[in-house]
Image 1 (tube, helix red, strand yellow):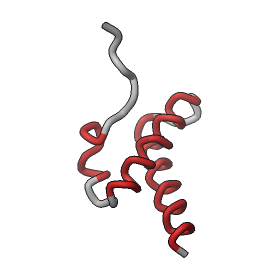
Image 2 (image 1 turned 120 degrees about the vertical axis):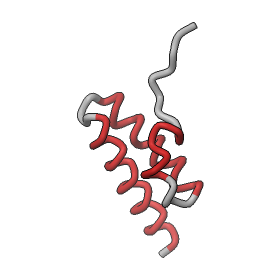
Image 3 (image 1 turned 30 degrees about the horizontal axis):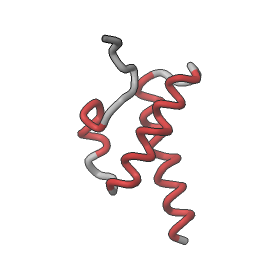
Length: 62
């Protein structure tokens, strides 16, 4: 069985615990895309995912 390379909440629980659930999910989605692109190292990818997700939901909520 092939092991998934996708990150989960458990992978970065301490960092993601501070986020709302929908923001956390989006941050992981973005971080996984950053990781797959090869443009970010692990720590940078999760930080970028968090920043983009928070910005997205901040913009949506006005």
